[in-house]
Length: 90
Image (cartoon, rainbow, N blue to C red; front, side, top):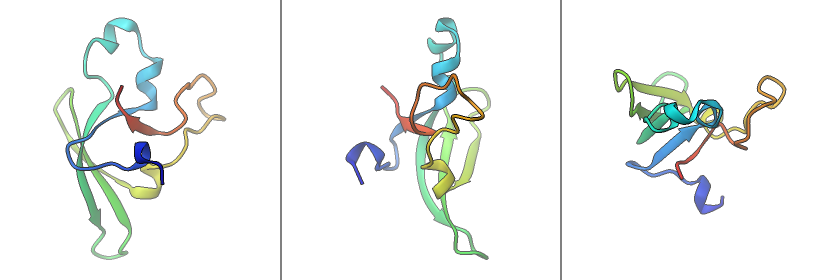
């Protein structure tokens, strides 16, 4: 896996929707997240990515690892410019 697709605790990533917001909103932390780490679902053993929002209420979220790493759905979001759902922030 290319280095830019390997996430470590503390890495800052952006959701693909960050590229679809106004310039004013991009001056905030909207759609930026800090990687907390990975976890394993206790029942299903599914790998999960744990991450924290850097905006709003700074919520902590878990998403299936495969979904977190997936490419952006171009059928649902044809205007998206980011290849993957989450990428390291630039």
